Structure formats: structure tokens, C-alpha cells
Amino acid sequence: MHEANENRYSEMIYNRCGRSGLLLSAMSLGMWHNFGSSAAYSNMAEMVTTAFDLGITHFDLANNYGPVPGAAEENFGRILRKELPAYRDEMIISTKAGYEMWPGPYGDHGSRKYLIASLDQSLRRMGLDYVDIFYHHRPDPETPMEETAAALDYAVRSGKALYAGVSNYTPEQTEKMAALLRGLGTPLTVHQPRYNMLDREFFEGLEPTLAKEGIGSVCFCPLAQGLLTGRYLNGIPADSRAASSSPFLSESRITEPLLNKVRALAEIARNRGQSLAQMATVWDLRNSLTSVILGASRASQIRENVEALKNKDFTQDELDQIDRILKA
Image 1 (tube, helix red, strand yellow):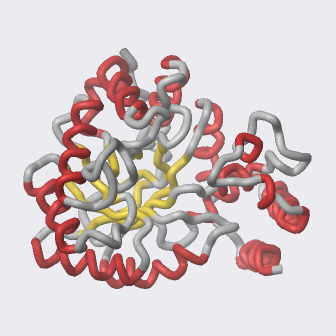
Image 2 (cartoon, helix red, strand yellow; image 1 turned 90 degrees about the vertical axis):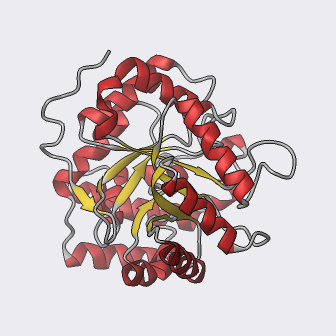
């Protein structure tokens, strides 16, 4: 059983999530990758306990994270029971439903049947009575949004979740969902968008809606699937995501003009005394974003990224240089 660092809250930054009472650690630990059925328990447990010892309180999951789907929730549940059973009330644990999870017409999208069944399964896998945030993972064009909103409202009213969220919703969809939930008496607390230096348009278009509605934001893919780590500057490593025919990062995307931009960004990071990954992570936090989800394969990467909070501010000249590079 792990005994947490008694100074874990001394250096982490905690941001208010929209206009709610919820504070989230500026960095969150995501379990999209490296928490699947073939992952080593010791490494997974070290990543979770390291994150917690550094003040990370938000742990982000989804029903289909693995592989296999559900494995990340099962493994996180094991870690909670074995390593951190005394600290549940110091954690924000989130999960999602919206992508295909089981065969047949009830295992995907946004129906009340699917969302509530999936949440019940997630709670069983993790051994929890409730999650702190339950997200609809993606919009469903076939299910009336009123039905999806009612399912999120039920999840909160039943005590199975404390806050409702959405992910990958456009500004218009977000505004409609916020109005529906407000009418039901359950605020839309948080949105989880994709956001990084190389992929800015979606979040920047969404930002005014979040501000108007008082919705917090927790971004995923801050390192652009590894492009903003500098890993691809000298070719495509055999064990990389691009080499594995990932649907999220193809070899064809890694062009020389793109790599030239990454090299120029890496030079700015060096002048700041940071790695490119560190700079890219805190760049996301420079404005209104509530929290950045870290993906990690080992505990040292978590330590490196949290260390970046010691130099999170940018000069106007640095921001102008970054903009010129990215818009070239």
C-alpha cells in the first residue's frame, strides 16, 4: 500500500472548472494508452502513485480505453484498491461513454440505454460507487440530444456521477447541451476537446462558448500524438505510434515542412530551459484551459511534465515567435 507524499499539494496548480465549485489539477493523468491488459502492473501503479504524489488529482478514463476495451478501468481499479485505498476522496476520477463498447445496437453512441449501462459497467470495473465526472464522449447525430442530456442528468441525480461533461462537441452542440442540462437542473460542467500547438482551431473556436456558458475545459493530445516531443525529428522510430499504422498518426503526416516547424519550436523550448514536451504542455495552459491530460508510458515522463509548471509563463516575444512558426 502506498503512503502518499505529505507535500503533494504544495506545488501543483489547481484551476476552477468553469463556474463550478470544482477545482482540477492543472495536469491530469490520462489512461488512453499504457494501461491495457498487457501492461505491467508495477509500471502502471508507479505512474498513478507518482502522479498523485506530485499533486495530480484528476485521473481520466473511458469505457473503451485499453486494449482490450475496459482494461484501463479494471487496472485503475486494482491500483486504487491495492495502492491508494485511503485517498479516494482526494481524487477526481472521470470516465466516458460514446464510442463502440460491445456488440449490437445498444453498445455505442448516445442513447439512454447505452450511457447508463456503460456507466454501471465502468463503476463495476473500477470498484467505485460513483465517478466524479461522466462524459458523453462524442456527439451522436441519430439520438435526440434531449435523450442524451436526460441520461447525463440521471447519472448525476442518481449519485453515480457528480458532474456531467461532454467531449468532441462543436460550439453549437455544446451550447445546446448546456441549455438542455441547465433546464434539467444539472449544469454542464466540463468539455474535453483536442488541443495542442499543431491543432488549435477546434478549441479556439470553442473557447468563446465555454466562457459564455461557464464550462471548464480539459484538453487531450497536448503533444500531438508525440509530434511535440521531438521523437520524430530524426526519422520514425520502429516502436513509435506512426510506425504502427495508428489511425491517429500516419507516416504521411510527418512531412519535412512539419518537422521544420517542430525543430524551430524545440529551439524556443531550449532557450526557455525546457524540453519541447514541457513547453508544449504549459503552452496549452497559458489562457483559459482548466487542465491538460498527460499521456505517459513511465513515471519519469510525468515528473518531467509537472516540472514544467515551474516555468509556465511566456513572454510576448516567445508567443509571437511560436505563432509565426505555426502559421508559416
